[in-house]
Image 1 (spheres, rainbow, N blue to C red):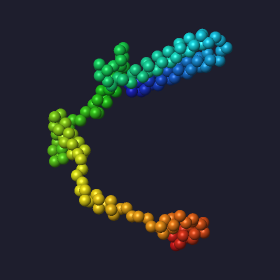
Image 2 (cartoon, rainbow, N blue to C red):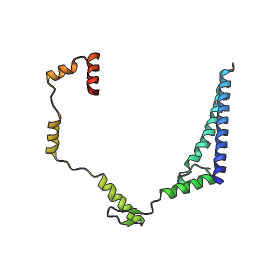
Image 3 (tube, rainbow, N blue to C red):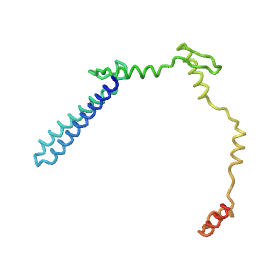
Image 4 (cartoon, helix red, strand yellow):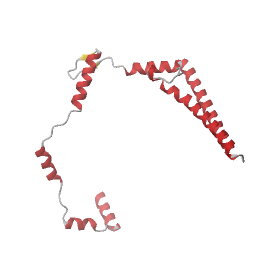
Amino acid sequence: MIKHLFTREGTVRKNDRIKMENFYYTAIYDVLQEPDQHRSKTLAMRRLKAKITRLNSIHHQRLLVDTGEQDRIMGEEPSLHHLLKTRKRQASRLIKQIYEDTSTLQTSSTSIMKVFSTSFHAKFQPIQIDERSVSQLADCGIQTVTSEMNAALKEPIFLEELQHDIIQRKA
């Protein structure tokens, strides 16, 4: 019930914001169409631009609810919906237990951090390679193309040959 209430309220606010933004854009278009003085057009355009900017900044201001108190914009007051969503997001991000490589369950925060750090250290450490094997692999993989091979590649393929090869392949 509460979720539907918040969803409905959010939808109504979004529709109102879109209607208001479209109204301002229509007003800008109307100002541009009027055969008026340049100075009055400029002032009207600046006012409408400020209104659109304020409308969008209020909308985007609510996106920063998941930040800390010191990172919030002055005057930002999160709604109950945003607070509940933030708590749910924080709870889903919290790791309460983890299994180590030895299948040991770790539950304390220090042991969980230790498991993560050892896992990342093992995953991202440099891979040891054998220089002789790399050079041997490079020598095997590169073959020079002879002039006969190159000539065969440059010959055109005719439609009859292609159809004949396809028919033989199917049989």
